Length: 199
Image (tube, rainbow, N blue to C red; front, side, top):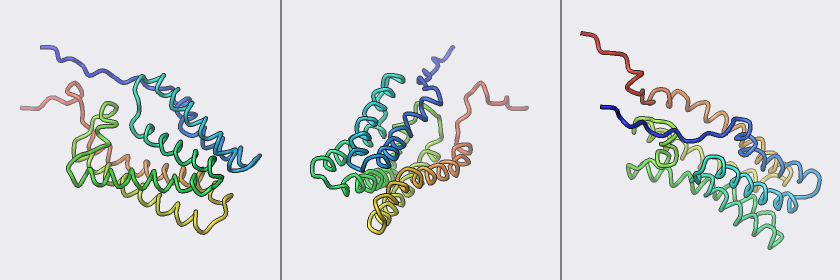
């Protein structure tokens, strides 16, 4: 009997995905250098919204994590522009990362992997692998939130923006590189790739 193959989700070209993921933040940094943080925040709101719409149009599904991030950016960015207080857009990083981290860690404690819900159609991992990734990412996001608060409370706005754009990007790259062994160790090999049993 032929098994029905699992549909493969549509993937964006790598260059376009990088532009969508990092373009809004780079625009934020550039516009802040040319104007100020309030103009940069307005550009960030528009760029994040456009990036989300392009992503949805390309892959025909709504990414859960990107959706939550967009909502927080719109709320705190909107408050920054409405009240004329740059602290709101700075706090957004702490709230978004901290809340997502707590949710991921809480999900593991409740025997639920929210990463599997979000990315289970993109990669097949054992449940233990999803739990490990969820726990590690949750703790990492909480650390990012705490670090952002330290920088926000003790550094100038220009230094915070540099940390927001380049510092967090570098930390993310290091973290995800460190998780590659976990993914490889728990990746499920499809039946047609499994070597036949001897004997």
